[in-house]
Amino acid sequence: MSSQAIREELCKYARKTVANKLVVGPGGNISARHEGKMYLSPSGFALDEIEPGQWVEVDIESGEVTDIGLRPSSEVLMHLYAYRHNPNIGAMVHTHPPYCIAFTLVEKELPIMFPDQAALVGRTVYVDYVLPTTDRLADAVVQKAYSSSILLGNHGLVTTGRNLREAYYRTEVVEESAKIYLISRAIKAPKVLTAEETEEIASLESEAYRIQLLQKMK
Image (cartoon, helix red, strand yellow):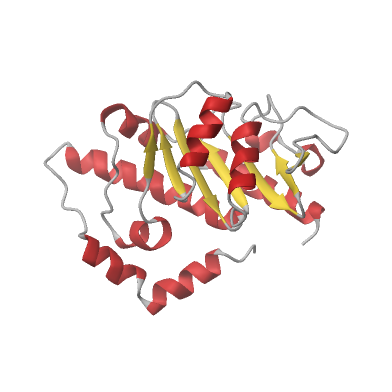
């Protein structure tokens, strides 16, 4: 896949992020890795306003902006550190989903409650509130980057994947999980899946096939 194709793919998922109300205004940032570079949303843009040529190319090893263009997102360090830390990360989606934020105001551990959550996301970890756009936040996220989904206290959500498609759909599933939890918790304590039930779902051949499809770019 070419860098131009990566840029177009970023536009596609940036627009889906806004359309599905996972961010508002100029909030959130997304990126993808390609041949030693990362392509990151520019600072000050609503995600659905970004054109293919406006994604900022940053060299992962040096941290230098390697194209002539716009200033990278203020969360550039969070993306940069994650790519340096874990070579299996091909894309990162950072959003401000309302149910996820609401969840972090009252809880920390998001239980696994239904099959899609178990198969496509697994355990979601939590980071206490850290001042945004700082190296402190970048460090805190990297320490939890063993998980593909990280709730940021009073802030939002970070998901990663081998590609943009996988990272984006993990965002949708975690937001749906937070929504389901908050609705059910308002009635009584939710029934959650046991570790054994979660493992059974993860071992299904049908789920393995579905995950393989998510890991394809198109």
